Length: 197
Image (cartoon, rainbow, N blue to C red; front, side):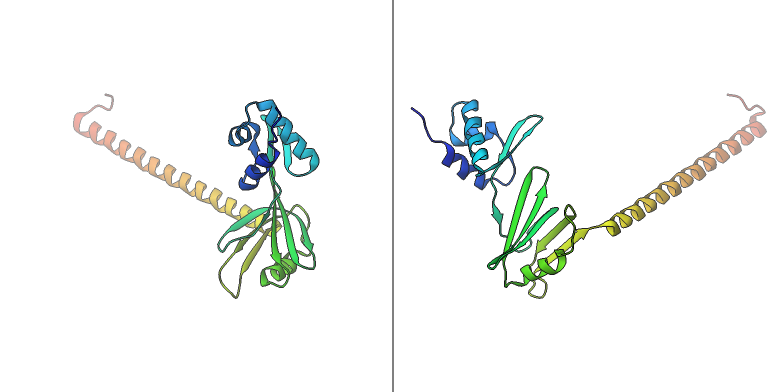
């Protein structure tokens, strides 16, 4: 008797937030055999109903789902596309194995912020966005460009300077210790008449 596990797999993957391996899918859906679970997942992948990728440890699968950001929820990843339709504005981000699709109704301030910020942004740029509950600024979008890399290099320079200063302080502390040791040896020579132990 053949059971149809595909609806169970689809409902399980739609609830997950990260890519899931075959063994987790098998146990969550009550499938007895690992190969059966893999076969059903690959069938769904071929149909285009889920996404999957073969990694060094085996297959992982995830469902393509649109995300509605809640207030103070953050999303980040590499900018893939900004799709503007009559009803909504959809932002597609990729992050390692996961594709995240975030959509807003077209007439909202969040959608207008996305359009204004990301129209000239090249594909592959790292971006982060956070939805707020502030009416004046409902969505904050940050793109990580060369300027941010320059700031990171500046921070690395400051860290390097701090390490050098710490090393200089340590050397002055050690020279102070050697000076005290020398004073102790002179005192010992004066009092006891010998320097050795």
